[in-house]
Length: 110
Length: 115
Image 1 (cartoon, rainbow over the protein chains, first blue to last red):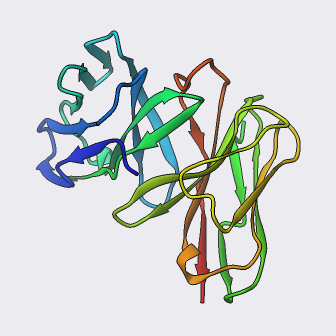
Image 2 (image 1 turned 45 degrees about the horizontal axis):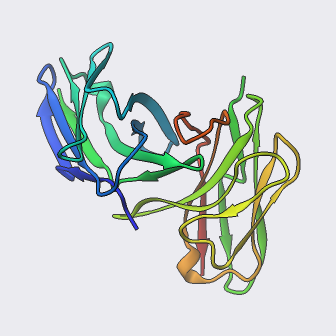
Image 3 (image 1 turned 60 degrees about the horizontal axis):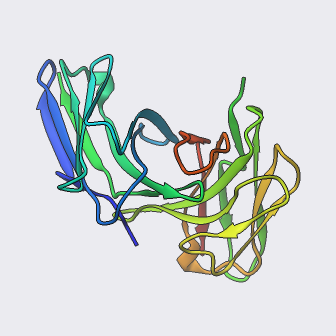
């Protein structure tokens, strides 16, 4: 069963614009992680936010977490063609296991 | 560092055949995982190994077996392949934590087709 659900399923924007992806989950979590997957490759870890954190930044990435709404968002600012990929949220609740959402396909148009 | 290495990258099998997918990591990680990725389904955990000598079932273990050969290697075996097992298989590893706070590092996958 999927814990996280990303929204939208697909997003297409112009280079230089900001991209926002959302993730909702159902049960309590210890942390939430975002991953990127380029076509034909494995997932790459982007950022981890713990349940007691509300916002975290890493370069052009900004992640927010609202545990009361069981939701998170990933903002990519000043998008580049190289940001074209699928983005997944994953929730951690214990026992070294993560549960992944279905992903958002992001396309950056030149 | 190679990170997580999976072999083979591609494989075509006939229904009923068996095969083993290999995974090795060189990051001295304690925990290793096997996922399958199907269109529209995201990643689903098949089996994981929290530490050397232990393995546990994930969300979709039926039809699979695993072996944690040593700290570096974690293999996934299909004893009698079925068309429903056509998928992309990913191996991942992470440092062991008391919970799942550790980021996971992924290989580039094995694309498996069962005819």
